[in-house]
Length: 604
Image 1 (spheres, helix red, strand yellow):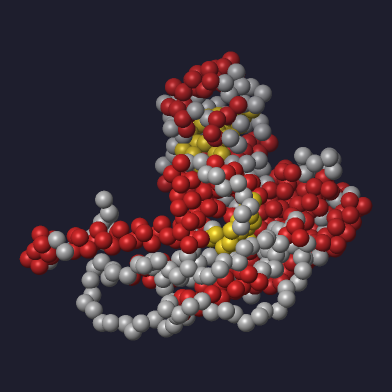
Image 2 (spheres, rainbow, N blue to C red):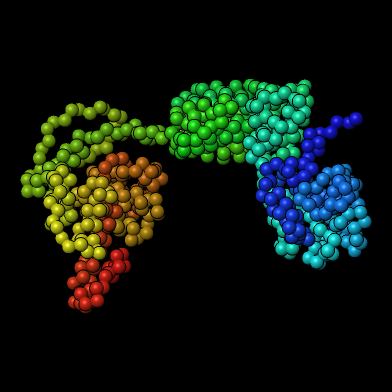
């Protein structure tokens, strides 16, 4: 007797044997029990989830005659009557299956519909099952529309497709649609365990886990892979044999890679990649296994309580929990994204293992660090003249009426190559801030809070305090700041600089300037781009400043952007004061308890 494959041998014969499709089973069982039967059903879902199986069980439920021949429509077909046995064997006269993938023309559909005029010969209903119905031509769909909408009372249509988007809406509107979902790996694992126990085939749990994941939600694929694994292992399923058959990567390699990436060990990453090359393991499978482990790590990092609920039979749970504690959550998310998108790069590279190495090393290149340095320039030490200027500015702020203080001699700085030292002309004296300029004391304690009446609008000066807190440091004006603000605003008004260059100019502070070199300071490394500096130099040349720019990273106390923000807030306060002091507005607020809606006042 010929061998019957597991996928056919263990095909469900009734709704009780269906696995993983409880939502469809419940709906059809209730409809059959109450006999609220529709004339057309559409089953959608990926391959191997039970579309054809549900169609055959539905046909048996409609035509089951019972063991004694007196049965009726039922949700539990007996499986022993002549109708049930004929449908299972595929020779029931009143059950017709049409493969639309090979019979997609209008002639085949018309030939099927010609049988609709004849009543059932053997059963209670005629059932037309059209598999892969989305493959039919438009003419074939149009030919069946009328019969599909109003079939004879003894005729039922069952349509199945893996791509419902290609089915015309005129057909969808005439059917009850059921979506059969892909099965979870846990569901597939449980079913495989029962099947192999029945077959008396010894199997490792880890081997079945590999088969369940490789099936990707399809029970038919899982049973077909199990057949192949039984033949490969000569009647025994072990993890090593199944892993070799599937070509999947051992989790030990994956854990070693993630551990090395968490520690920043590029040598181990490269050596492990070479090991995968030598063993002939798939690079795509490596990234796929890594995404699975990283997803489990991210879940544990977000919900630590899940570690206590982990399956004790899974030996990888402890290692996954250890890696989740070793790698920061942001690096886990970044590595997951790199592995996920890196699979598409494997086919573009001449060597997939070289592409795998580059994908993994990319995390080390983007690994966050406390101090970022440029690759082509060493960190420029603070020049003595800049220290003296900063100390003088701070002394002038603390004691506005006192002359600039002369700081004590500083220790000599480490010498750097001449090309990296910016010659700065030391200013003869620090210019005092202009009359009326906004200068905020950053060292002395804030003035005492004065009790005042609560108002809907924020009190004057609140926006200034909020702005200073938002920027982190007070605004300290100087002649260089006035000059830089005027220069930048000329460039902005003339529209001679683009978005990134304009942002660099607005967010920077002119620290020092010489005849042919200027030094700017910004707070964000992202603004210090070579292309933006060059474009700003070209724009400054159009105003007659033929100089070379140097940019450093540091604390900015005076920038055009901060000045513009303070000026805008001053105009806003003036506009609010005009409205609040208006007699008509005051009378409305006094007589009718009117309130000014916050945020609705704008300066003209």
